[in-house]
Image 1 (cartoon, rainbow over the protein chains, first blue to last red):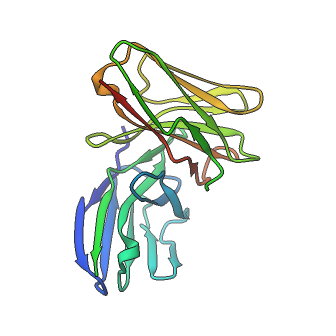
Image 2 (image 1 turned 90 degrees about the horizontal axis):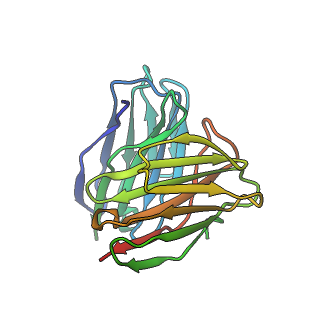
Amino acid sequence: TQLLEQSPQFLSIQEGENLTVYCNSSSVFSSLQWYRQEPGEGPVLLVTVVTGGEVKKLKRLTFQFGDARKDSSLHITAAQPGDTGLYLCAGYNQGGKLIFGQGTELSVKP
Amino acid sequence: DSGVTQTPKHLITATGQRVTLRCSPRSGDLSVYWYQQSLDQGLQFLIQYYNGEERAKGNILERFSAQQFPDLHSELNLSSLELGDSALYFCASSVSWGNYGYTFGSGTRLTVV
């Protein structure tokens, strides 16, 4: 069974701080996606990374796919209260199913 | 509005009952996915349909069933409900399958009492 482990599970920081969320697996994924979910809503796709070593930037968010395509990271620079939410990584397994990590609950305090 | 419509938004029902959750995918999307989200299990894949046909199955209980209709909307049927079935049920859609991002609906919160 391919599993995605996210760390940390919870993160509470002050506005302006930087943070990194990790998504790790022992299995290779054809691609990894990052989603953000707010209370009462469904997850919203932030980015898809496909190539090993790929780096994508979305404003203050930087996403990286590991060279071996087994891990990914999300780095947020100068976090803002609007970044608060549940961050989920997800990967396509060999069966073609998109499986999700348990998520990282981020709270950014003003 | 994501373009994926789920109804109802909230559902409270008693153990042993049967409910139907409905999903209309984003216009142009042929694939529909159902996920269950609970605090202890996270987002769990239940089942996928593509253009009316079942394409992939996850950890879906035998008490649960789903289908996708010719107009591409999908329904998830949950029967003989147990307290442990209380969760958020999400529908998502995508153009096809593979390395495509999913568009999720706002979910149906099911409470079994």
